[in-house]
Image (tube, rainbow, N blue to C red):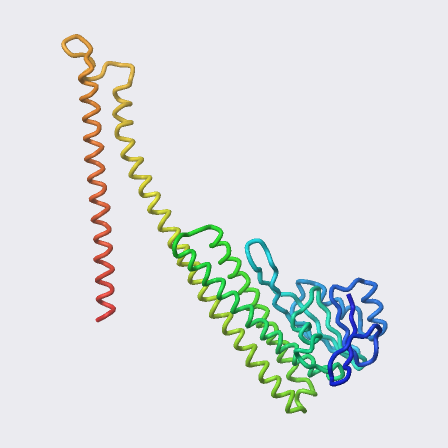
Length: 333
């Protein structure tokens, strides 16, 4: 889809049906035919236009044949059954003496603000257009980071009462999103450095002030992303330790039950062999008395072993608690 916008009365943007000089060309997932048509009208190489149509394209800059291209990563929120999913998508801002162009696979909220007039831009001032877009993109990153933090806190609150696999997977997904955001923000910062060397930014104080504000917003987003990522990583490690401790407790209980069941099983195996066994006969006649004697002895031995194991477990816990208290007292001193 291709749309053309020009500055009308009061510098507001108005949509045009055809290409006009010094306009803004907004391309969202264009077809090959649309790319060829726009490239012929704008004198912008097709390779530049198609650069942002690759989802794996890294943030970078390119200057060729009088055209300047800035590719940056933009945050994307996708709805799913498990909740909002956060990722990044490349967007290219290209300009030359004829026009300014934006290319992306999906619609961008910052560009929508340009179209609706929430953010004032001028199509004949490409550097101001780029600075405004980069500032809006940095603020969009901050918004998404706050949403990720709030969702993380909600999931952790639910995990505080009961550990669920779905909640753990949600935290893992959020952690992956923060990794993508961190990589994208650092890549965008390098693009910002290239923009600072532009002649229009160096000569204009207004552009320099806008660039300084952009750097502040970008650094804030990078720092917030790092903090949220470290916090979530620590939480994931803590939940992993909790799960491991629960598994160890379950295995310990199962081991005790297995040992206790092994005692009567072993005794029953001895007396179930097809050969003469002790107490098989009483005064030359079989008797059921010894059956109950063996059962009672088996239960007694099993109970004794159970008591010993429980006392040993309790003593080990008490010793562990004393060790922790001693360490705390040493730290306080």
